[in-house]
Image: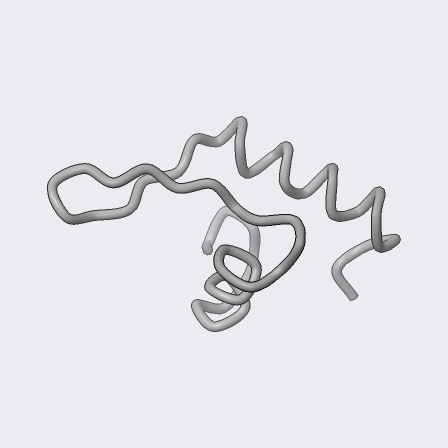
Length: 53
């Protein structure tokens, strides 16, 4: 969330409900995210929508 500059609600929306999803990995009951996956999400989403705004 912090890396992408999003609130928890916005992050969850993109993680679970959008066409372009943020991939997460489960380890010991926590969700972890690769920086490369977050960067890819941002590039893909910006290309499809023209940005997050």
